Length: 430
Ligand code: FAD
Image: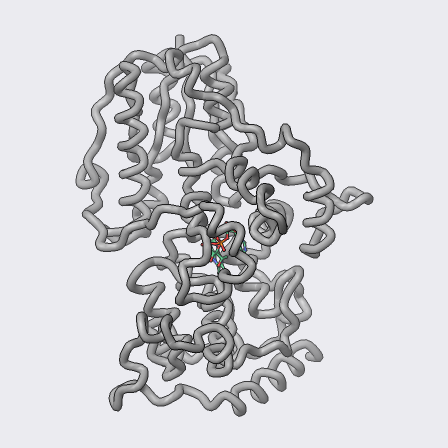
């Protein structure tokens, strides 16, 4: 008689809340990961995220082998796989951590029903965030739609116990001693990717200087935590603890943005496909396909926009400042629906996270809950003066920007700015 711990967005065996509860349940634990075929079938063969997941799982598997255990890795439909495993290994309980995305919520609902029908408990825990769902709400019980009061309440609510680590390692002896074979990438239908996820850097240099360095894409001044937080190869409690050590809360406040958008997605799942504020529904997007293609390929003739898109295409990452500039250029200069841009980022970003991507895209487009005002239009040329004065970033990613063959600007800035203001204004008034 064993229990299952099902890893999903938490690819680590230290400081993992659901895993801790499984390991201290008094029963032996079989750790499980399922490559969900419904998700995988939409991805290219050499998807770097699948490579990263596979690598991280292998690390877990190797550590478990030192404890005479191993990781069970399956490929298929989660509900079908779980139904089979519970019979095969006489499972009494399934443990896992919460996931707040609409697809995951409906999948978990189906699984809970299937397990309950077999008298098996499905036990789920908060692990991905410090505060979830209704943990931080307004005095009247409604969710916050504005970041600043949310972050104030978040900080005022925070207790040391909220970010204490849980000690899983002392309980590794409670893993079931079973040997499973570990699949190769090929076994799950994938090939080696050319892009790799970079390690994170939470050194005191990064955190202490964050306020001064975070806006300059030529500098390695940010933590690179996003992909690790997305796949749970680091615990958010550790990140918050580090953030609290700094004299200012600037870094911590970024982690609170992440939690803000997580709770927005939980409360307003329709914001994935609709403008958060319906008054923007009347905007007449131009949605020109050739211009969209030029944007995707980094051929707009605006060096900072092009450098950003090429960084994304070549590395699976883009600096936050440049994400804001490229996204603003798409929605405002080209008047292309933010959903097109969101979809492209979702395909390319290694740190793609539905809550963060949709939240930030709507923020940039001006349609979101707590958005940048629509009349704030980044000037893609003067942003170079402010944030890449020595051209370090554009030289790195769009080195042809001074060459004869470099494309002419796809649209003239002043004209695009006026057109955007008129289009948004008439959209709102319609
Ligand atoms: P750091 O600057 O070191 O920040 C530390 C952590 O704080 C990040 O890892 C992240 O978890 C969080 N954070 C920082 N900025 C934001 C923000 N604006 N919103 C929410 N959380 C934040 N981030 C994603 O994780 N996934 C996405 O799919 C994503 N899409 C984005 C799309 C657009 C249009 C924009 C403007 C931003 C998007 N971001 C997204 C937010 C942000 O750009 C990245 O989190 C950040 O650049 C990652 O680099 P870092 O880890 O070095 O960040």
